[in-house]
Image (cartoon, rainbow, N blue to C red; front, side):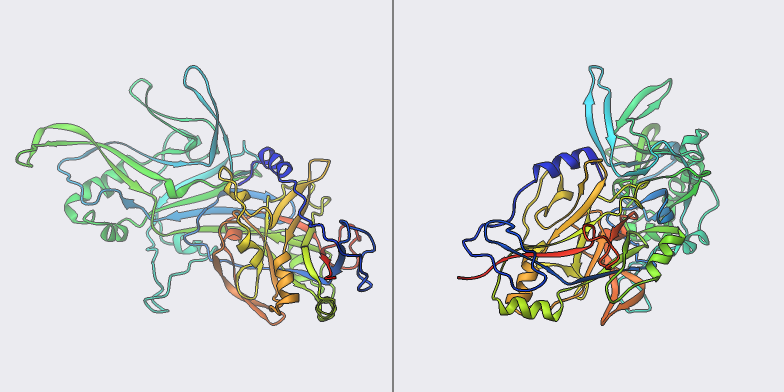
Length: 524
């Protein structure tokens, strides 16, 4: 999610000087020391860093915390079409049904939005978050019954093994879906030309009387005949008795996406808060006897979009992206690092040569600050939006770095900007374009130098949320050096966008080259 104006103001507010002044003389401990007084008597050392990019391939994409829907055509990485499938559950199982007749049925899935103002007539104005591409673009959205059962466990791996579904498993659903179009409204904005709107949703009845008002979201009228037969007429069958039976009977909804021409827009609807509401009339119940009366009344059945889900990514990669992630310089690193979320790519990074470690240990240094700065290739990214944040982690052990763990900084109104001392947030140049990402790893470096911690291989990915540190499986693991990579952070899978960064190769101009800078003092 990204609100650029808010983000830039926040970055300015977080402009803090982290260096610590120390009363020690400047020391030259090697050719890599930059001979200037950084902060009083603090010294600076540029250590070895080698980075290459690599494709992640197909990724595990079931039960993600955030899901994408739509089409995103990136001029650098290529096109991604994201579709979605979800189980549904009865809010109240085993409803009492006598002679139910459906009145209406509709689906509502809220978007991430911010209330900007409300006028004197009560009309509210919102801005949408997590919409990428042309916000006015449209795509075809067809919703069908899913007829493939989404399992909790993998029967081939034992009862305790959680089922994995992958970003390219769409054929499982396409080959096992209903043929009846469920969002069959005559209003084509609900199917053939669907788009993301920031307007309030007003459900009306009769001659236009407003029954309910919702925050911006996906609001679609669904096929009444289907839900009359599938839900209301199923009361006597026992299929509504409990949700275990119901999930087997009605296996969910499939949201199929198709691009219209070259239009490109992708959003992140809040599917976990989605609901299907069935309005119907049925016999009243005698409260004393529990028997049905001849008189009827309006009633409601609600289904939640909850249970197992899968987000599918159909990728058509560009030639430059494919070339970049298959051509690497393992000695000095790549000139450019192509980092893309979803079923995309990441960077693998080696820091600190044996000589670096031996030299710094011999000098018994106190690490005051250490950071890696990744500069954006602004020319390549000229026509693409830069991700708000990148995430650097321990690739060997599949976990955050120690600096992440000890950074308790947070902003209650903007949780995605938490851990801003550790960093990884995009900084902007004077031309309002992304300039660089700086990640502070002071504790990590200090532990290697002073506590003999293992110098592990690092991984770099784009991230949707710095607070999500779980991992998703790769369908085809790969090996880099001596490290077998079997997973990628979930926060990268849910953010199918990317950036191009300058790498560590000697052909990169010095001022843009990837750097590991260590600021230190020495004991008296």
